[in-house]
Image (cartoon, rainbow, N blue to C red):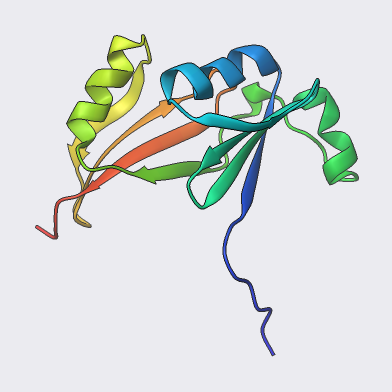
Length: 132
């Protein structure tokens, strides 16, 4: 028998600078905080909560696994569906957010671009453009 999973309810991201990272999600991405304390700020992202947690509080959640430093490099990418990737990228640039790449058309039928939050987490915006 396989494990029965429903959906992703929350994603917790570790950040060295909680205030700067929370401000990015609130002020640039326009997300609403649904919970906040000295160690974390949780944002409503539709069907998922994105919880930004101080890196110093992370060990109690994942012990004995180590908490990696930002400099260790990215091991995942979070993708958000958008109606117009170019328009979203223009808005990000207006807020001083540098794109890692894109926007570009992908062979699997999406137009994508990536950027990082202040803690170094990689985000992708993806627009469905149909298979080419």
